[in-house]
Image 1 (cartoon, rainbow, N blue to C red):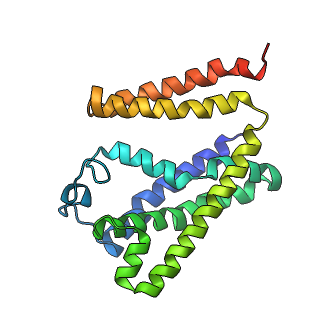
Image 2 (cartoon, rainbow, N blue to C red):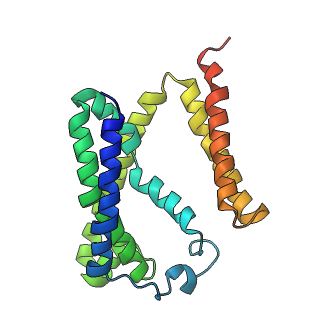
Amino acid sequence: MHALYLILPAIGIFVIGYRYYSAFIAAKVMALDDTRVTPAHTKYDGHNYYPTSKWVLFGHHFAAITGSGPLIGPTLAAQFGYAPGFIWLVAGCVLAGAVHDFVILWASVRRGGRSLAEITRDEIGPVAWFAGAIAILFIVVIAIAGLGIVVVNALAESPWGTFTIAMTIPLAIFMGFYMYVWRKGRVVEATVIGILGLMACVIFGEPLNHPG
């Protein structure tokens, strides 16, 4: 079966979900207001609160919400077949995942950039805050542990993969200096350099799998 038979319908569903379902939630449920000043401006400190490009925010959020999906997803598909994973991916993203992250971001921005646990304390009380903080801690630990196991197993016998992933750290640091110090605001240039650098690591790291 050709992958395009899955990719094209998924893209169509995501576009429709973004155009209509997301717009409905933004307008009717959360009542977004472009005139509101965000915490990045009201609490600006140059570090934790810093106005930045929407594309930088998109990159951060995209990396955060995907999490272990790109790594665990293919593994589950190989074990149980592509259909359950594909249906869960598409339906889960449109109806649950995207909505969940959308609401959390909105709530944080409306509450001065505070975390979910802090919002719970302010809106419900200290007992709910404690329970929420403990729950979030366990969820994060489990997610990191699960992702760590998958990554370690995938890279245990692959010096090539280990090298490529390790190189994302200096590449990210270089990109940060490039668009915030050397060429301030040049997000596209930094992104292109980062992508080309990562491709170079993939290409030139291959011999590491065949030492000697």
